[in-house]
Every structure is written in C-alpha cells, then in structure tokens.
Image (cartoon, rainbow, N blue to C red; front, side, top):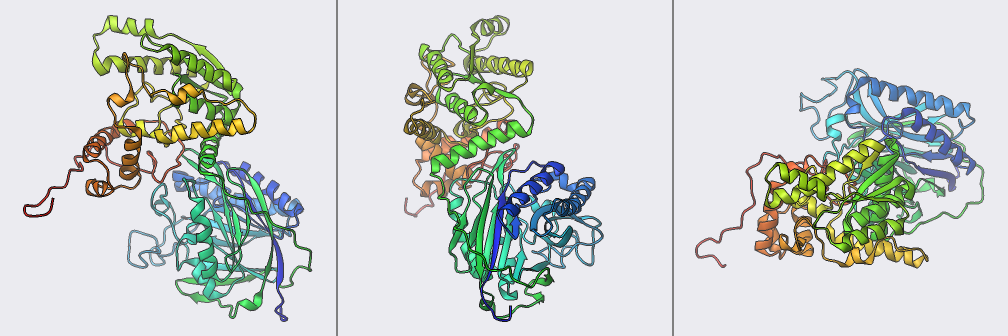
Length: 611
C-alpha cells in the first residue's frame, strides 16, 4: 500500500431470516448464504446481529448452557466454512458470547456501580452481544457490542455486559472495524473511535425492528456515522418476524462521503453485493491502543490488495410506499409466527366487517388460501349484509369458509342465567370465542384475533370473546389505518388485474359489533379520526393531559378516551401478541402497572391567570 492507490473490495450483505434458538439452522443459513457471496466473488460477507442465536433471545441469554452452545456453534461454523471451501471468504457473524471470569465496566457508569461487572468485580460467564470475523477456519477477532439499548422493546442492559475494545482487521489492504447495531445510533460511539483510529470500512450487523417510516431515518443516520468514522459503512439488517417484532432488512452500503452505494429491498431475504473503491490516502493516521473510551486492537489477515477487476453496478432499491410497507410487515410478521412455530393453518371469525376482512386478506397473502379457514357466526342481531359480506370476502380470497349460527347456543345460556345490557351483548362474543377455540383445538388451526389497536386501546374487544386467539395480526393497526390498508390492497390488486380481496361494502358500511339492534361503534365512541389521533399522542408519545390539549384535541374527547384506555390495562395484559408497526405497541413495548391510581386530569386555571 506504499503507493497509496485506491484499493478494491467486493462485499456482500446477507439480510437473512433467522429463528431464535435454532443454532444449527442459523449456522446452515450462514453457510448457504456465504456460498452465494463467494459465488458472487465477494471478499467479505456481513450477517445480521446475533445471527447464530436469532434476535432477540430474551431470557435464553441467562442460560449458561445456551451461551456455551452459541460459543461452540461459532467455532464449529468457522471450521465448517473452511471445510466447504469458503475459508478465503471473511465472514462477519453475530452470536451470543459468554466470556469467562471477567466483565468490563458498564458504559454509562464506569467503575462506580458495584452491582454491575467491572474489572474489579468480575462476573463468571458474562454474556455479551457479540460479532466475530471468521476466516481460514478460525475465529479471527471477536467484538462485544458497546452500547446496549434499554428502551422500547429493548432490554439489553438486563442481559449483556458492554465491550471496551474495537478490533480492526486488515483484509486485502483494507482496515475493517467491527461494530454492532446500537453502536451506530450513538454519536461519539465506536464509529467516532474508528474515525480517530483510522479505518477504511466499518461493518455494522443489525437487528433493528421495523416501525412505520423507520427506513426514512436509517440512511441519514448511516451517512452521519460514515462522516464521523471517515469510512465507508456496511449496514446489514435482519429480516423476518419474531413474536411481536418484525424486521424489514433495508440493508445498505454508504461511502465515506455519504453517497448511497447500494440498498436492499425490504421484507425479503437478500444478498446485496457492492464493489468498494477505498482510498487509503484519505486516512492520515492509523492508531491503536487507547483511543477515546475504547481500546483499538489491530489484526492483519492480508496486506496485499486484491488484483484490479471490473466493478459491477450496484443495486439501489427504492423504499416502499407507506401502505405497502405496513402491509408487507404485517404479512411477514404473521407468516413467520405461524411457520416458525410449526402451525399448519389458521382460523378466524368472519363478521362481514372491515377488521375480519382485512385479517383474512393478510392471512391469505401470508399463508396461501388453503391454510386459512373462516367461520361465519351469526347471531339473531346479525344483519343480512354481514353474512353476505363475510361469504363474499371468503370467495374473493379462495379460502375455506363455513357458517355456524350461534343464536341457539346464546338462547341456551340465557335460559340458564339472567344476563342483561353489556353482559348479554358480550355473551354473544364469548360464545363465538368458545366455538372458534373449539375448532382451533379440533383441527390444529391457530385462532387469529381480529381486534385493531383502537379497540384494544379503549377495551372494546371482549375478553374471552373476540379478543381470544393466539395471534392478533392488526393489534397495532389503528382503525383509520385499517381502512387505508384495505383501500390500498384493493387498488394493488386492481392495478394487476386481480380480484379485489376486500368487499367494498365491508369498507363503506359504518362499523358495528352487531351485539344489539341497530348498534354502531359511534354510539359509544368518538369518531375514529378523533380517537386514533388521541391514542397516537397518549399511547405512542406518552403525552399527558396538558400536552394533549396543547396539540388541539377536544378536552371532552381526551378525558373520555384516557379514562377508557386507563381502565383497560388488565384486558390488554391478557391479549394475544401481534406485529408491532408503530412507535409504541401494546405488549412488550408499553409496560404500565395494572394496579395504578394515577389518572391524567384537566389542568386547573389559577385565579387571576388568563383562561
């Protein structure tokens, strides 16, 4: 490198769909996708965060047996790659490390917190969120994630010990620094250290869960870190569903100047390959040892640059539209929940309304029509159009459909016990839930709950009735977005000359649970436009009463909605998991005590102050 000419390196980013706990299956993924990278002529391939264990492994991290198996899987993987003729390919893969007998000081409280591992207070078998570079049958270097997110759906401070070293590996004359996920989101973190130490390339394995418009944040973020590192950055993100989370991929490569060199599609497994031309002369000094808060270590695999070759054009995929992005997230989240848990099929109640019609369309897109079973469950209050719309929905989708009238069963209950008002209305929903669970039990289907976020927020889904189910595909979808998605999905089909999957009547008619004569949702709720706007600010953004009023919400509507949301916490705690798409989803993302006397109140106006 004495002549300081630009050097080439062909790199691949393998955004793959892993399965938590499947060390053997995930290792096979790495081998097969590494072979594809080698076939593409790559010199380096990067896999997502915690590839071998899947992400997030949650309390599996606390089992020493699991961590030890992860460590062994890493060593075995390095040997397997070499045995399969892939030893010349540098492979960066995430895994769970279990360092024996030592743990560094926490990032936020160095040398001060006696309850956390430190050099003076080691903990045997400290778990680490780690990435390793494999080459020639060996584990060349190991990197331990420094910044551990502990907000939203993340609990990494609960599980992991942060790292203090930044390994830099010279590969074909290119200095490559390893980081992991959150390290990229922190200004002045490992990317800043890399910029001070002097590197050519930063690799960033990620498991960054999807939420709406998050792809709009990623490119500017990666560009900022590239400027800070003064190096190209490879951002490789996981794809696939894991319980309530779904990962969208959207992997990318960015030059030191912030140019987007390549970008992968969302919600599909994909190998993104890009040719880099890196200028070592742009790195004035290459340091090791203590650099800022970390210790930089340097390792040499190969000094000699690869022989010059003709670069291939890279692919930059445009991000999806908002509705298509959300639709694909919901489809993939549902598909992976069913398939990864080995379930053959699903069943759902079909009311003719928009929610069940949307869930049915999602299920058919995710699993195929033959694995989806709909059941019409009319009561004496069900309208004729409800029955016809449900049948129409099933016919459009080509799914299985049957009808089981519930009126005789409800009559039998009412002959045995006196119920009135809401209790009588909810009895119908609970009979439906019992029947659907019986069919689920009989045939091995997983029951899908069809409640949306607006209903879940205010408690308008009947416990052990329409709230029953093993998965709730639209649990994080507000009612207004339900309609928007339905219109988008029909337009998507229409543009392709296909049958529109959702009956227009289901979209157009006023929403109703049909548990009483002439009942409509508007009888007991504000308009869904008002309701969803308040929920977005109160639930997703955690705004209190004063801030809600400042944002222009009607005081009476706010007071009413907040009361409903607050008293329904015990119901939500029992609800099925559903795919997260919003800033804050009900479930692991929003954790409030059930027993809780705090209530938001209208601000009082002080005497003499302006009203």
